Image (cartoon, rainbow, N blue to C red; front, side, top):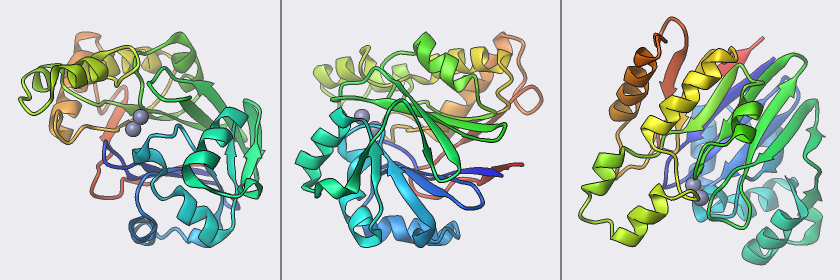
Amino acid sequence: MLKIQTLSSGSAGNITYIGSATTGILVDVGLPLSMTLKLMSQANIDPHSITGLVITHEHSDHIKGVADFVTQYNIPIYCYNRCAKVLRRNLKLPPHHFIETESNFYIGDINVNCFPVPHDSQFCLGYTFHYNNLSVGIATDIGQMTDIILANLATCQIVVIESNHDVQKLMANPKYPDWLKRRILGNHGHLSNLDCGRAIAKLHQANVSQIILAHLSEKNNTPTLAYQTVKQYLQTQGITEGKDIFIDVALQSQIGNCYCLE
Ligand SMILES: [Zn+2]
Ligand SMILES: [Zn+2]
């Protein structure tokens, strides 16, 4: 059994739960501890069942609650040594909280694989999680889609993927200065709804059956807009949402659906 559930997703904070019968993992803790525990309680996830954290990158919407969580539950952060260096400095955590990993490692009975994602942080990783022949993957904060990301996500049945913004909505947003628009649209920023749709069309060829659109901008996107843009693009490629592939949208302010592969 392998479960995946987003607890919060978007530019204001990100937490995703991955679990087998005996192992619980959080990917990023981008909200304060109290809010994280509230969301876990709503999802019926016992925080004592969490065996370790894995972190995508050091931006605050991914690490805000990390230090408090690992201190409270005395669990490790599994990460690359470059990642550990930045987190140690930023979070002021003692070294015993870090387990430096290679690209492929185990947390309990879940095999974890990580891969590089282009983004304007010290490092940014996507992850796939494997239990027997069951696999789920997550990649957000994607400046541009790459063959490496696609090849890794293509090994999964369920994929959480960034659908950050609608390009027209972003360009028309008077509150965003030009430099910020350039950053978001650039090769180390975030993935647009349309580019997400293009990636999903490729993942469909690899038998990914369930997609969860994630890391939506609250200012430059809406869940309906992301869903419709992706759905319409897939239609132009002869792929029908709800039949050939299923699309869900992860929200910022409420826990997502829990998906369980058996
Ligand atoms: Zn980021
Ligand atoms: Zn982010």
